Amino acid sequence: MAKKKDKDIIENIELCPGVELSPGFFEKKENRLLTLLLKGVIVYLLSMGSIGFYLSALDVEYNVVLCHLIIGIVAILCAFLYYRLWVENTGYILLFILFGLLVYQFRTYINSGFYALVNMTVDEAAQYFNVDIQKLYTEQIENRYITITFVCLFIGVVLDILLNVYISRRMQYVNSLFTIMSLNLIPLYMTAEPDTFYVVM
Image (cartoon, rainbow, N blue to C red; front, side, top):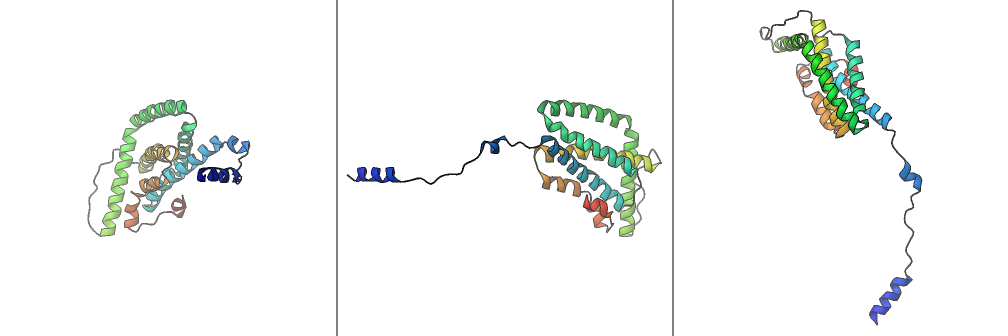
């Protein structure tokens, strides 16, 4: 008897209407190219911002326009590699081959630029701590303007690739910030002031 009564109550209950989604809701697609372009711009801002932060804090001279141009183009190209899976696989292989050949071709400039940066950082530290430190590395090429431009491009492309993986594949923006700010703690510790433009980047 009780079961029959419960059944009658359940049958007489009116359910409230749910949420209706129009077919257009499911047809909306992201503008893939615009999304990739924005991610590329973010990678460029982080990469060049990090490099410019460090170099401007130490008053290092280099070819600023060339570095902005090449690092920006590579950042956007790396982002567009994620347009399709086959584009990503093929593109990264070609990118690494080309990058490896260029690094091998200009290895002397890159090494000298790296040594120049280390020597300049040590000089800044020696002045800050008021100690006498001799030059650590012998630079094979004396023209620091050229060698630091080369090492800036090298580090910029490496950062483009690394940050692109963090942002385009894993969406890890916090890890990206930690990656770019780790070395920039050195000039900050020595109270060196970077250019505001690169801080904003």
